[in-house]
Image 1 (cartoon, helix red, strand yellow):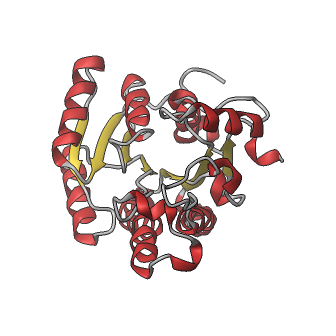
Image 2 (cartoon, rainbow, N blue to C red; image 1 turned 135 degrees about the vertical axis):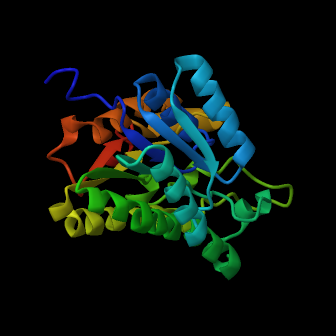
Length: 273
């Protein structure tokens, strides 16, 4: 293995949900390693701001553009701009996901029996229909090129059920319990089958499709949650935001050229128990 094998230099990489917690990390490492990064999210100003930051930090070639992953016309518009600027797509990271469809914390205190159909539909629309549409439209371009990579971002909760005991300290004043919603697990589980289907479907087009399964990332969680999560994890800690950067580079690069339809689990050992 040499440096060329693990390189993403000059590869055109599209990242959805790019201005979120992990999306910004993927953008940073890809820009640092010389990729041409298409930064997409719903907020045009934030996408442009991040592209400007990467230009200043790494002299990176980035395109910041708004895209609604649940809207076919929006994705097609982005594809046209990518082809106009770069002429190709080398990789797509389906990272965009919705964790709370209502924007109200009450959503997390709603028991399964009371979950609203509208919230269910909205989360699935972003979390699984979004990757479906992006893969269909942007992946078709890679299939035409006869080369490309798709990385679908799942979660440990797409493999195993949420441990609701982790959230026992999160209560409302009326003693309602915090519930990690079924919508998250169902959508993240569906991502894995989307990966397997597309890996088989596009194998003859040399389009590789894999899933990255990250564990919980520390994001100013309270000490009790961190303690409980760390106890539940063989490596004894939550993930740092940077812990998935190496996996992203590996999956895009030629180092993983014989890997498709697989789940790369990077979770500190969470799912071994």
